[in-house]
Image 1 (cartoon, helix red, strand yellow):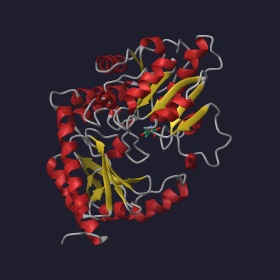
Image 2 (cartoon, helix red, strand yellow):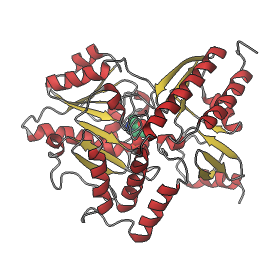
Image 3 (tube, helix red, strand yellow):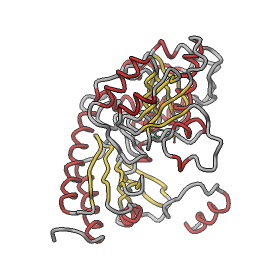
Image 4 (cartoon, helix red, strand yellow):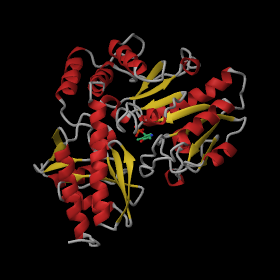
Length: 402
Ligand SMILES: *Cc1c(COP(=O)(O)O)cnc(C)c1O
């Protein structure tokens, strides 16, 4: 069947919710993916940060295949060995005492919001359900996480809005201080805003949020759906800031591309979700949990995260070189292998041109080109991407030097 047939069938049979690039990817290995016509691409989108080990990683493939051959799913009516093992690994390597598994980032954040409400309800504070989040944030597409998301464009048409949410400018501690009241159950934020354009907060912001939450008694919930699982060179991005949240949500890279999310929390908070109060059919099922174990085992190998840091610094320095050459590149920002360039013009055309040139990159927040390669990306692969980007930026004009 020709590709065009699939485009027609997609239009006929699939909800038209996505703006898709005109290619169909059918296989991959490492940081490369192949389309249905046999064209190869260097993948700097990495399944939107969901493929930390790249494609067809032997350890991950083996873990999934092995588990699929034994048991894929049984439900949480029973004890699940891979789920217990993965929870133990996450707890041993984070601030958290306990883990609840679900299936996506939105679902993890939804669970965290429910938990914040239940936490104060259990303490007799029935009016303390308000949640403060950041402008420009992204927390998911369910009704509550849409309300948490600080971008009104995503909510348009889905009114009435879920009550109990307000937004303050990211990085502005005074605005947050003013917004937090006796009715505030939680502050939810990303350590680095991903979808919002890879925005890194001012250096002491996270510490100040932590202090404010501790002072006022509300919960600090970190959405590490994108920044977690080694993306920034630490297992979890908040480690860069020397603080720990009360609750942290994970998804994207957690099971290396197999759908999985998690709510992690300290004991005092986790205990409010008592038996029967929260549940999901698939959460932490044997297949996803086996994949999660394989991913975490790789990330925890000696030197792995250090390598993410050095590759991230290498990517940053190469992007900074480009910024010096091309005035159209206004800024380079990010942490580890979550990097971006801010352009003086909309970035969608450049992303399309890069794809034509054989490199997949994502345009977010209109003018931001975002780089989320698999964490195993090599310096050669970074050089190759930079070479193509340099070429495309030159074609757009505005190169200062020949
Ligand atoms: C992607 C993302 C989400 C939503 O995750 P889904 O799995 O798409 O529901 C939530 N928060 C952040 C920070 C994200 O990057």
